[in-house]
Image (cartoon, rainbow, N blue to C red; front, side, top):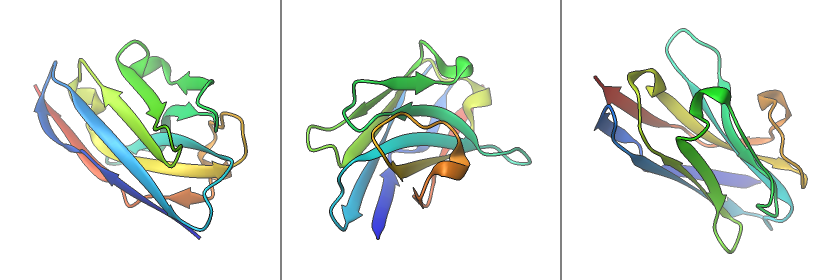
Length: 124
């Protein structure tokens, strides 16, 4: 089993920044691509960003391109989401997820493990 624990959410004013972290623990964490998803009330869970196992390949939803950056720690068992120029429409619960494999994966149904989620609220 793989456990994912997110941190770093909170309340921020529009235009501000937050950095989310996701730490993976459990059995040998090797060859897992990872992603960040978000879900606003009454909406589906959507991809925000994803990163390959090596960290060399990334994907961003159009709505966050140029504002958010996904990265992995040197040990590859931690993934970060740096969020800048936040907007009220970024308000959601943000989830970290992991999928066995090397490539970037964008479909949430393909992910094997999920964190508990962290709330991000952006006030106008």
